[in-house]
Amino acid sequence: MLEPLFENASIDLKIDGKRIWFYPRISTVICDWPEACTFSLTYKSSNSNYPCHFCLVSKDNLANTCLRKSQAVLRNKENTKKYYDNDTTKEASLEPVYNYFWDIPDLNIYDATVSDRMHHLDLGLYHYQIEFTKELLSKSSINKFNRRIAEIPRHPGLKIFAGGLQSIARLTANEFRDLMKVIVFVVDNLHNKDLSEVYVKWNEMYLLSRLETFKESDLKIFQKAIDDWANLFIKLFQNISGLKFPKLHSWNNKWIHN
Image 1 (cartoon, helix red, strand yellow):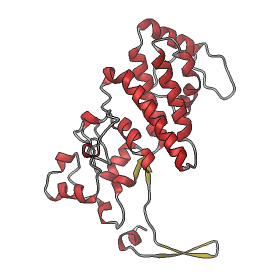
Image 2 (image 1 turned 135 degrees about the vertical axis):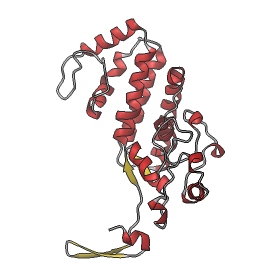
Image 3 (image 1 turned 180 degrees about the horizontal axis):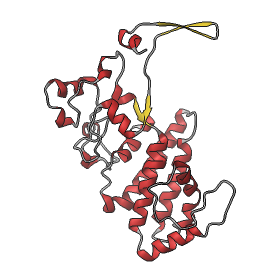
Image 4 (image 1 turned 180 degrees about the vertical axis):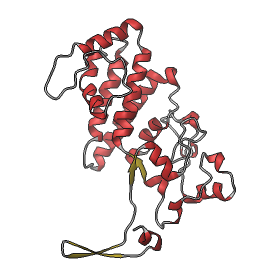
């Protein structure tokens, strides 16, 4: 099925009685983060020296929202294949395996591979944000946090967390989206204004991410929303975790450009 991609050949396809002639191309590969690493043959561990599957940013710079181009060299066939040919793949956190996608013309698999929104945001960055919030709060504030969630009245279509939010490890994406609807009020006055604001900024950014189409002006607004949220997120939580995880870097540096 993929043979025409390698041969750069055209296809004459008949659909509903109509013939369509085209050259097949891979434009975007949408997947979760481990799958993106599999396509790119980069290390899956976020503790590797260069954990990003689309660029060569060091793990120490993952929370840097002001990266210069020289600090984040984009991966491509040419520079990654050099590591393979020179038997130095470890230096770029690459698996020592020839990448199947290098042989497909007009494809940069590192640029084409994009993590899907559900795994990246709902089950990824938002999960981190709630976990870091719980680490930030004092014990008495945590108790108030859980009590406020448990006291939210029932409403059609809204998940109720009657026991508070003791663990979020098994929450689904839909349940995280339900939390987005109420948590701004839950964290109000539990720490400082920035904590409430980071959830407001998240919701603004998240709603924009769900738009189906974008004008150029929309992309600028979206990028600003990402920057505003990311900067506040880093300000609040950097001392807790160091924020050395690739999803934050990827969201802040790649999504708008794909």
